[in-house]
Length: 275
Image 1 (cartoon, rainbow, N blue to C red):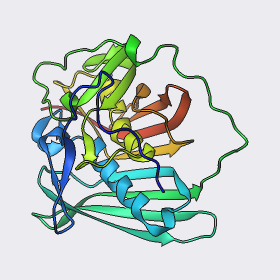
Image 2 (cartoon, rainbow, N blue to C red; image 1 turned 90 degrees about the horizontal axis):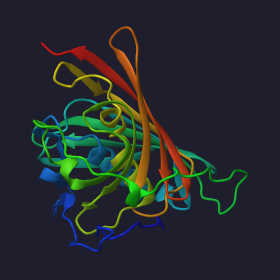
Image 3 (cartoon, helix red, strand yellow; image 1 turned 120 degrees about the vertical axis):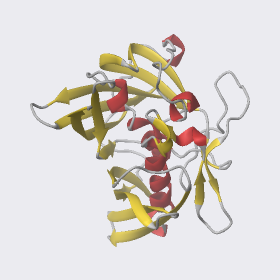
């Protein structure tokens, strides 16, 4: 059984938030406004689709008794707000590890908009390594910041942010605690892996080094290596962006819970000056 995280309540025990997606009787999903991108209300932030695809990977029978050690998301185009379908399959079965994949389809246009592949590893209670130290300050010591003027709410407003260094819209590296207030689908609790995937796509925006009014820096993919399942409802991104001399950039992050290191992520960025 995949472990669950939380019930969608805030740490101050406030009201239960809505979900990112609502399931339909036919097995498809409606994307809710909470998934909205910072760039406008017609497309989704990358976090919720990444989590929805990870949910499908974890639902495969081959995932029983296993954990995801690596998930790669390929963004094939803007993910619209509207009905979506998800399918998952096994690419390579094995006694120890398995390669699985999932596809997200825009139902209205009948075309895939995102894909994910994941490697499943055996779930072990003990291993050779140890949990690294957490950030020196927890969520309660972080500072909230308003989102930049002109940025759309949606996902940004659905997540509780506590900044230890930097701010969204402020150029440079960032250290920020995140807590998604909505659940992922209906009233289902988060799993550790879906929670990570819902948050880590934010690394490129949190650590942007360019003015988004003058430059576009879209990630075409997201790769996450998960060292262990996180504990609790808060994750911290220690994020940074590196630019190449051409059109390619790289956003990376170390991901922590309040016990220590959980995962590392990387995103290839398409960097282009706005016209």
